[in-house]
Image (cartoon, rainbow, N blue to C red; front, side, top):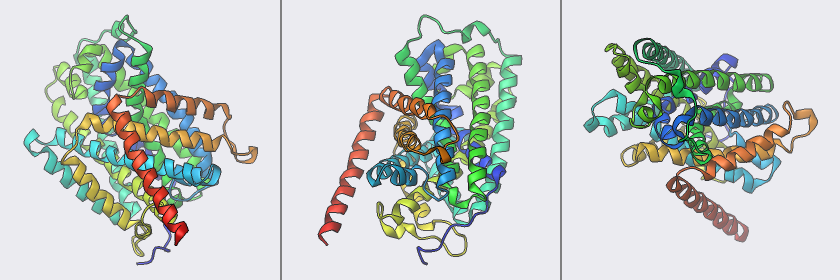
Length: 417
């Protein structure tokens, strides 16, 4: 199968929004609020707002870059074109390692809500293999299944939020930041919550499969992000008013705790179905997005060129997605969920740092937003990255350095050949 076969433009605006929303309304809404509440305390909403502002600035950069470069690969391509090959590699490698960790987090969250503890890791591995198989059948099948799981997730979340507010003991005073709030804690929570908002990158990385990308992508990205912000804000307010910051921080499954606090016993299975659906939807979209970035890097030789193959019938990067599926299976059998969230956030924040720097170099003909937004986005990415848990930062730097060393050796060997 030839690596010269191209991807097919089959996605409209609605399809692109579904892909982005499916990536954002995933494991983050069920897993990220607990560590974020531990960091920010009563200022959780401030951390969420800060994460949303940085995400919006990054989204504007991705939208206008994707309109100018409507090909697979996202910021890996934009960094190469605007800043140089090493910047592109930094973005692409950060995205691949960060979002591979996200895939593991999604699969583990699905299993945590779907089955007893003893079965969680093997069931998570099975989910990864099953959804990789769906992606290998073509992007239209990916969108169809994503529509179903997004609908289930949103319906479940709406039900649980209403149950908590109506059946629990909500107190709006718990939303107001108190003496426990610190700026370092707010920044740390924003970095963790950014994990939840980064899904709109999937729209840009699939730019080679979107119809009329110059029009579709700039519309789909902010629309998907705006919908996700509304969902996360509603869940955050419900958690704080019913459970309070301490109650949210004390449980690994805050949305499930919200359902229990409502006193409506029938909401517990609703939470499980919604969490499972959201996690599967995000995992499905992530496999597609990471596969496209891997494809773009392999085309340039920054990853093994064999991974640049596109299936002649299904028009998907089948080797890249197949390898990704195997790597994620290995991760879900060994990693911790919260560690995966922090590691993912670090990689993706670096990815968007490059996106903002690249967008800042665009000329007026290709600009759709003020350049000041790219300054806000770049500064925000750096601030959030350095305030993540130390283990996540150290792990990210080590893996990033390993990738850079591999590329340097490959370039040196290639120059001598």
